[in-house]
Image (cartoon, rainbow, N blue to C red; front, top):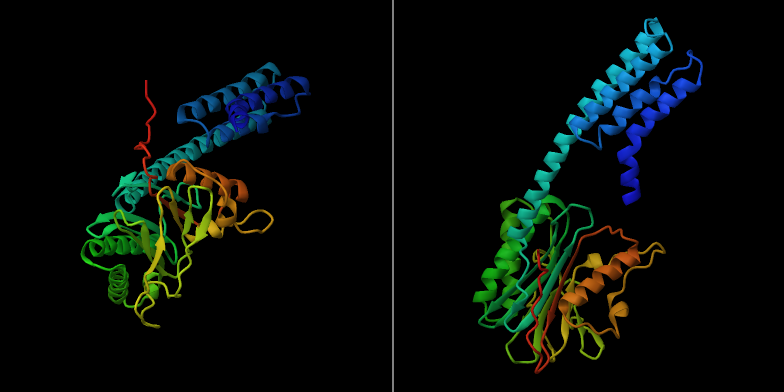
Length: 369
């Protein structure tokens, strides 16, 4: 990539020099006008307006100078060629302005998207209720900051509660659904004594929003989600899974367990199809272990051979110092598996219970001179 950039920087000059060499080494009836016309067009999308203008001036001057050197400056073909270079140069300047304005709009859109992400999907603190937390949001498309994947962690009177989910669909409707789910979760997590009650509050919030929009399909239909509750000093975790990929429990010795739900349930937002009480699974969560929650962008990441990524197989037997290191390694491994490409967003949340006697771990920030 650096070599390509260096080559692009010198390419307009090389084209002009190539045109001059061609003009000087061939009979007068051969023209280098295509070279001089190409130089400002090449500069237009990559350089500033000033550099593009300078390239255009040099191209026109070289065209006139070489026609003068050949004694053909007043000939009709030479005049037409010079006018052609002038016209193409003017077009290149126009293209440059359009590209620059588009770039400014794109930069503005990026800033807005980043602000929306921080507002709708803020990164959780690295330590909540005595647990170490790390989160990642990997967008499938470059410069896309937020889509339909979501996560939230909150310290409540009942312990640390969290939700990880995936709204069906993309675009602004999905982002609005994310805001509804997270808003309802933060309120319900503080008020509901049971995790099943939190799930029902989320169900009702999506139903209300779907009614407001006339149909559930207008509101993306449904949301897969997994909710968890980690009581203080209990060594247990309670989980409600509403059609979401099962979390993984990574033990401190490298062992791994899939926390599959004992009772299958429909995703949130599908209460009209069937309704039954949410089942809360309770599992052991010992000191030094890490819970990994993720969306289906992880398990649907496909390699060039068509094989889907299997987090359980890839992480089994591995030991990580903390949740940040786990997610960093996981993101790198997915990129290696897919060759850097992905078709779906991926949200990751890792929650570690510190081992007994483990010193406080704090993320160090780089020193800026």
